Image (cartoon, rainbow over all chains, first blue to last red; front, top):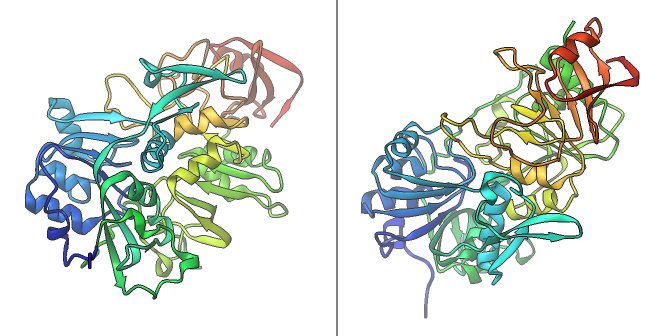
Length: 233
Length: 216
């Protein structure tokens, strides 16, 4: 019988090849696939195109892949907070494509749901509309944006079962469910892997049909970018 | 006296209506959350996937899996709901979010906004700003009237790369409240003790004075 469960991150990412296009879930450092990123760093795979809302920070998240010079191109909506990223961009070592966040999300969603392209109002009249088809509906202009194509999607969930069904926690959900459906091969890492039957079907966020490999991750750091607290009193 | 950023936020809070779903940008807009009138229910949307954003956590409540779009730790409230990024921007583009409050570097007299890129400086990205400004009918700007050099930020035409065209309806600055009309900026309120002449002098774009002009 086929099983989706693999023992660790190194096995999960073993066939990710040089030049692959990969989607990585997460918003900032929240909900990122920490174990898989570390495994990609150890594997040393090169010339990656990474589709991810952000590019991590210098020493965490996708920043680790950047430090190791494994990324050829970043496709993101916001890439601040990363000095190595800036250095590589200015020297021309790294290519970057900036995309409005909602368009980024919809291009992931479209990729996973058989929609080749869609019209969106975001970016009409700005420099990102250059070279794109513009069409008017009901007196308002829209841009044609195309679905992404990704060889692999790497995502992170809170709980998952051996069938690949997933539940997320808090705002760590973000891009993970839509990237899950978008990859030709989707690798899910979870904090807690349970046997089938343990998750209530009423509360599953991502159906296992989208997941090809799943493993229980270890030692999640869950680094916080902006720890803001209110007075206890 | 011109207003400080807290007073700008306080004035904007009077625009909120009971039942509004509101997205607050980074900077002065974030401060508006502190001044929501107690007698109305306003639900804050955070575009990374939360409706019903609560205050910052106490130290004992900090959860790395719960952040806002500025990547700050936050809390949920009774009635909060979590969702993915596609759903979040469906809400935004679909016009379900009633009001968006954003910071800006420049606004032009026809309602264009520039707030994402300065040529020659590191470009960090537009995040969700282009989606937000292209979608809602009610987009308002909170900003200082002039930049650090003292130049007007209310222009005939934006000099910086724009984030969206003809999308801003109302602007709240340290000096004034202005609406964007067919004829340019319309001055409707001014900070107490600030002269109309000063506001005209610090507004490069076309400006008309409302007959009903009053103090903020």
